[in-house]
Length: 299
Ligand code: GDP
Image 1 (cartoon, rainbow, N blue to C red):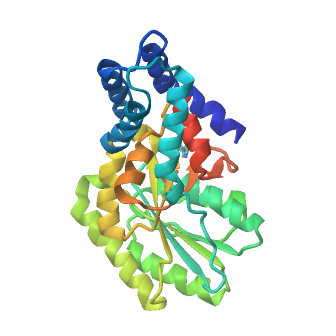
Image 2 (tube, rainbow, N blue to C red; image 1 turned 135 degrees about the vertical axis):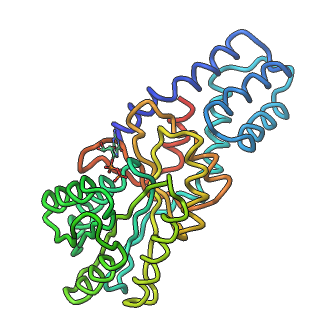
């Protein structure tokens, strides 16, 4: 958590800085409200949330002197209001044997790393974990997942590059059932360059999993890279349509990204947010906490 706050406060200085520059000198009037709204929109919070914040400020404080801290506390409260309903802890369901977790997202978003971190977490909770290297297009993705399987000491189902990913998913789930695995996490390809192909492939993976277990996949986690800003919105749209996303993970919040886009996404889609990635290490995954995130955004 320390890492999150330090990383994010660094990254959210643009918002804090923007507010400071507006409010140290002026009364709250139409100009300052408009400037503040611009700062919030530039921070990717989305027009709806930005307006809610400025509307509330306007209603409560128009024409009066206002301090930076007062603006920040309203900002935190409004952002938390949007994030609280989506801050849903990821649940391991005891009755699934195994619980099938499909992990989707564009290449480089942090799918493989997140699977590795989750494998470590679930193993520490006493669960039997298995991984499936379903991104059969990239040799590097297969190799990376093997490294994580070794590091966390869990079995992995992998095939050569170019193999059929749906076939691999079928075999992995069959094997996981036979071996009494609790959680099967399946990596997938993320080539957004060819949306139709990607869609067809993900749909096929889901269809084939359901031949083994009609209730699978139990979770479809979409991994979003915080540094991609507005792009994340269209990724939620594409993967939401294709794969039936059930929850989100946002990675790379330890860098310069503010993560403001998560507020816009929460407002627009209302999808549960389970975890945030705050580094490349095995323990650099935190449960998503609305108030901490709102505070970090406000700087
Ligand atoms: P994939 O292509 O979606 O499987 O993405 P990877 O898991 O291979 O991650 C791409 C890069 O991002 C790798 O260099 C990871 O180490 C890095 N990465 C993943 N998550 C995080 C994070 O939370 N913070 C930082 N700083 N880097 C991350």
